[in-house]
View 1 (cartoon, rainbow, N blue to C red):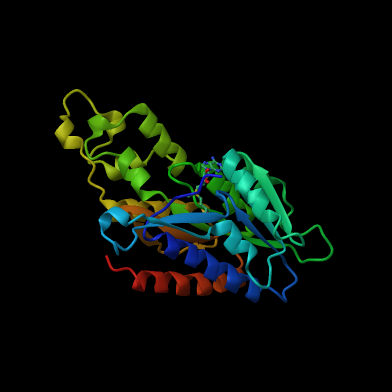
View 2: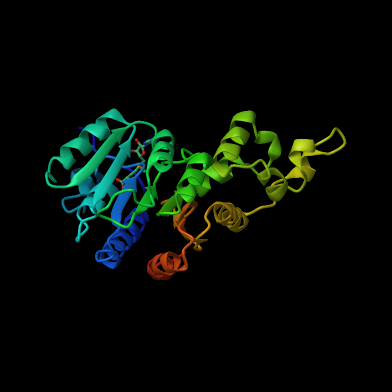
Amino acid sequence: MAAHKFGGPDTPKKLRCLQEYLQAFSLALRHQNFACIYIDAFAGSGSRTEVRPALPLFGPEFAEPEEISTPGSARIALEIDPPLHSVVLIEQDTSRFAELKAMIDQFPTRSIIPRQGDANKLVQRLCARTNWRGANTVARGIRGVIFLDPYGMEVSWSTVEAIAKTEALDCWYFFPLSGLYRNAPHDPTRLDVFKEANLDRVLGTPNWRERWYDHDISRKDMFETEAQAVRRADIDAIEGYVKERLSSAFKGTVLDPIRLHHKNGAPLASLFFAVSNPSPAAVRLATDIASHILKRGKSSQVR
Ligand SMILES: C[S@@+](CC[C@H](N)C(=O)[O-])C[C@H]1O[C@@H](n2cnc3c(N)ncnc32)[C@H](O)[C@@H]1O
């Protein structure tokens, strides 16, 4: 099967944040009689293949790049100890889904629910149909963590809203900053209906137009020159706007993200953490753990 090569130099940092959170979450809730679940909405294949340049020991012509395979988010979640009660793995791609299923076979005693299909549809259905408050007698209810790790602009705002409405899920969202600034060029003449529709779908509102551009480009008239309507919002302002949007959906809290970068140093995405549960105890527990993890991630940022 084809190796799943994705991400960049900061990908290990993203996966480390997830691993540390799941580990602490599972330990913290182990005696609290909640059923703890993990939902990996963009699960990949279970592993990540990284290509590293080899040492040119016998000259550059013999330097074959090395392929190194490390655990992806799905395997990381399955290796958490104490184990989470249930793990839901969603993946759209047929060959990666087959690899996920082969990996699941290595955990025969675990409750793992693999689903092939579109994460937006499946997550929204799961959020709406699950009885989070606990119809079941063995637990006080369900608490969980969901990881949104798309390649780009795949997550629709309606999915974010569905997660927030559960009041039971903590959410790690690898938000595609580069998708945003690529779809919202400085020069608004380069905007097209597809880019605008993409931004509306991911952000859940049309008001980025007036917030990011000098003028309301939706009402641009014949007297306004193109040069007047440039995008003024820089990457910090765009990231701040995303935090504001997430805070409008999540009743618990949304923490300041860490920003991850492409190989060339350009901003790639921001890793956000949001709590849907409004209970002060749940917010305290989740944010204590996550802010510690994000702080450590930030202090290791060299940019
Ligand atoms: C960045 S990778 C995820 C990597 C994974 N979290 C890991 O750590 O190994 C994104 C994955 O999402 C899958 N994908 C893309 N669009 C999707 C969609 N609409 N629904 C479900 N999966 C999707 C891709 O096939 C790909 O495997």
